[in-house]
Amino acid sequence: DQQVKQNSPSLSVQEGRISILNCDYTNSMFDYFLWYKKYPAEGPTFLISISSIKDKNEDGRFTVFLNKSAKHLSLHIVPSQPGDSAVYFCAARRGTTGTASKLTFGTGTRLQVTL
Amino acid sequence: DGGITQSPKYLFRKEGQNVTLSCEQNLNHDAMYWYRQDPGQGLRLIYYSQIVNDFQKGDIAEGYSVSREKKESFPLTVTSAQKNPTAFYLCASSMWTDSYGYTFGSGTRLTVV
Image (cartoon, chains in turn purple, red):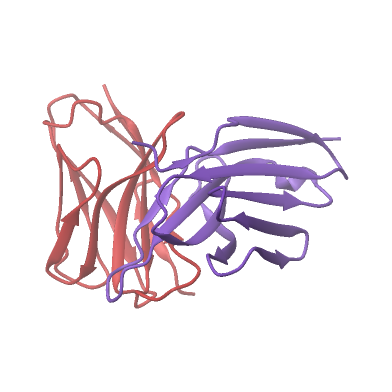
């Protein structure tokens, strides 16, 4: 049962344009959402996050939008740069007091930013 | 510099042999995790540990074992019972209330021949 889904395995965007990566989830108990970026043969690195009490969080070129009613979040990258080419994972955390933040990951979207 | 170290980066083993992957962190994080990455499957949780001498099974624990004798260390053993051990293995750590989620190691690529 895939609780976090990234339905687009790959995305190609021209440099300077907007990249939009999508993520859907099924578990309404998730209270915190994160995006990670991963280069080949490396571990993922944290990019941006959003709490379920917000609908938008912005950090420089990266903005994450959360639509709780649709159980959908998206990552916008504006403007896209060649260095953004990587695999992006969406992750969700189910809030549980006093326990570790166990994350559930999506399957990833490979972003290719072309010149 | 604080961080999380996985070793080795590449590992080759013959079928039927057990192999142990190392994971060490000096971030003073309480929790540690092991994930496996396969093409098209994302990251799947194998085991996690919230404190020393305690660990819990994740979604795909069969064929794996772990120990947590020290806060800094969380080694993963891939046993001969694991049917498809060839994969990219990622170790991560976090504080309980860390809003940034995990800090990941750089991973170990295990190939079983």
